[in-house]
Image 1 (cartoon, rainbow, N blue to C red):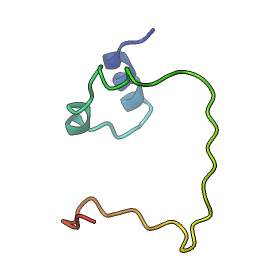
Image 2: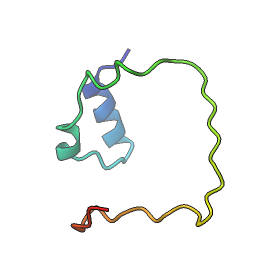
Image 3: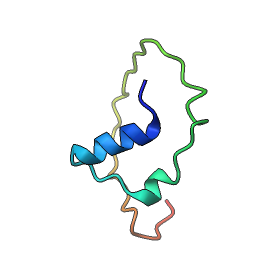
Image 4: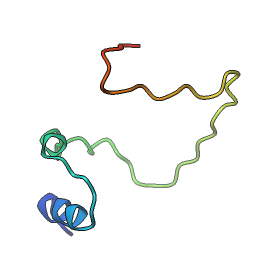
Length: 62
């Protein structure tokens, strides 16, 4: 199994924009809650449709 450094190196070699400030937020402990298996989700029909994604560069806290 590859370690995080090997995976990040491969992602960068494959041309993915892996930023150091994003990597700094990674934690080996955030996946303890993930249970492996098959999951099925149904997206409800929303009357107004999906909302637009927020712009991370704005100060809007909605």
